[in-house]
Amino acid sequence: MTLRDIVKSLDATVYLGENQLDREVEKAFASDLMSDVLTLKETPILVTGLCNIQTIRTCDMATLDEVIFVRNKKPSDDMLELAEENDMVVLGCQYSMFKTCGLLYQLGLKPLY
Amino acid sequence: MHQEYTVVEGDFVNAGTASSSVKKTLKQLNVNPQVIKRVVVALYEAEVNAIAHAYGGKVSVDIDSDKIRMVVADKGPGIPDIALAMKEGYSTARPEVRDMGFGAGMGLPNMQKNVDKLNVTSEVGVGTTVEMEVNFV
Ligand SMILES: Nc1ncnc2c1ncn2[C@@H]1O[C@H](COP(=O)(O)OP(=O)(O)O)[C@@H](O)[C@H]1O
Ligand SMILES: [Mg+2]
Figure 1 (cartoon, rainbow over the protein chains, first blue to last red):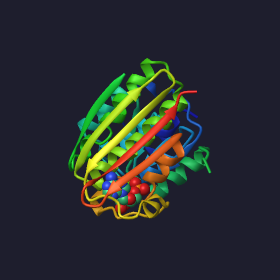
Figure 2 (figure 1 turned 90 degrees about the vertical axis):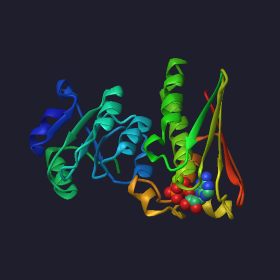
Figure 3 (figure 1 turned 120 degrees about the vertical axis):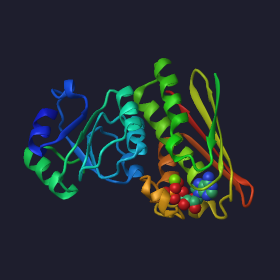
């Protein structure tokens, strides 16, 4: 599926990467623990409630190109600047982590483990 | 090639600047992306530790044609029991560190998993030095 399908299903806000929503996504990983994200060999879309600069840095190190912030957490300008340098797509939605993951699972995104 | 970076005490916002910069350099040198990921994940965890558990420090990086050597040396409380600190899940992190998405006791294990050589030396009350090496091939 594409990021556009995800945006539609989550009624998501696109903070960055409006013109890249045709990117294909196959898998998702949900965590607020960046050390855990840093263990991933694959590069899923990240679903997280942790909204600070370290989230974006972690995506940079782990080469993750897409992130969704849940519960209306809004990324700061600094975060978006760093994310833009790395060609990331940054989304946000109002739903809880649980509901977000449920909707994405229903949509057909696959887990890593 | 030699590079040095300063890790500033308490500066969580800038944790990872050394790793980001090393990533750019290695990309320019056409190092295998998988290898770059291993290097920067390990260095990033070490940088976070120098801020989370010590009072900042210095990162020095030496890049050769076949490997990278990284040394993160901090001034800090030191680690009384290194074997214990290396155990997955062991952490003395403050809530502030957890709020940044770290502090689950996975940093040192993450470093160990990603590098070819890891050497941690520490003196209580003085500081900690983490030396890491990753081979490019
Ligand atoms: N540079 C350091 N200075 C002092 N103590 C450290 C340092 N690095 C690690 N430690 C100790 O080792 C523990 C485990 O480190 P780590 O595996 O990175 O997990 P975490 O950072 O999540 O606590 C830390 O909680 C701390 O007690
Ligand atoms: Mg750590």
